[in-house]
Image 1 (cartoon, one colour):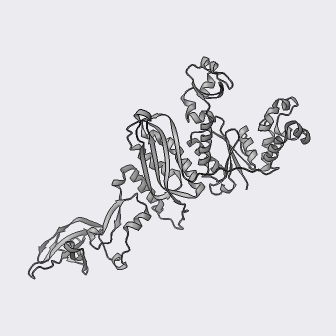
Image 2 (cartoon, rainbow, N blue to C red; image 1 turned 135 degrees about the horizontal axis):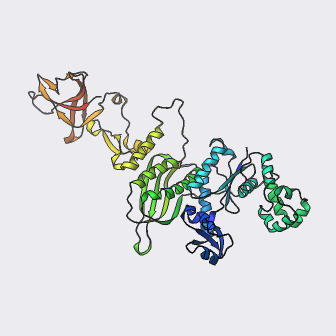
Length: 495
């Protein structure tokens, strides 16, 4: 099924200047001294398109006037297109602040056209824009429906009906001839198509017929698709000085959406992201604050990254105002698609468990969330060390997990190993810990160490009168006389 989605941003100049302009103040964008766009508050005060600067200031002396900046508008459209690459690799820029997306191959992946449209609208809102969205079997038809606000058409028959009702001057090649079309009573695209083609071509040129043929599916169209750069770095200039770190989450989310589109375009997953919080420049310049987030499981989705940033920003105290954000992805790798289990575990998948640990790291700090890593040493107190859990599993396995003999892995070990062995009393030639201990296993000899750190111990599983099990050892004293009694120690407790 071939399906196109058209996105038209009717208030792009204002959206570029502030994502919350509608509720902020009376904002007006000027181009060559005349009003190009106005916020609802400015419209309520009487401001209209085409009005001069003096007229605006006479009506609203406190209005915020902005000059149109085509460079920033182009950058905003490029950022929006980059974010939408997560839904389809075929995204192209169109005329008049609009985008076209070929989503026919993405419908099944995202659960149908309605679910896909909801996700696209959510992404557009998260980036701080407002857009009109439409669906159509042709690209030019989707553009016309979005530009005219005529909804969706999933089949050619419904597309033709909706297109026939649109104004005849809506296509760009028809606008110079809007007065002539109105004079002859041609007010809709349906009436425009019924005009003689040779005469229409002589009067309006072949471009108008080309647009109509493409919109109604009569001819094919060629596009230049958006190409993602080889490396990712996105920057966002804030609209005001921000004093609270948690207020930066909306801007960071928009950068994460762009990174998600870039990752999907290159089929990559990110293992580490760096968010730079830029402060004042000039004489009072300060180095940016760096938020370095290392992921245990590489990902290409933004939901989990947003939760991590929310925790990090919520616990961050800013030393200076923030005026800009920069997001980088220094560590990426090939995307590995997840494999679902036929019988899922009750506690969630392994990826869910790692995401929970990453949230704990973001909330408590990397030095407070540790994981056990085995070492190549037979001595129980030295056979393990604690490393930050934010280290990736691959790195942890390569650096800290040696290949242990199978017979050693099968030996019983206590769930609670004491930090320091406790010397036991001897009563009637038996070790005593609350009650006389009875040996319940054969000895396991552990002899390891080097030079002055050598140790030789015989470990037993002992049982007390309360049926509790303990891990005890008898120390073999090298070089002592035969009359010296063996010393017993408690080293662990079984559950």
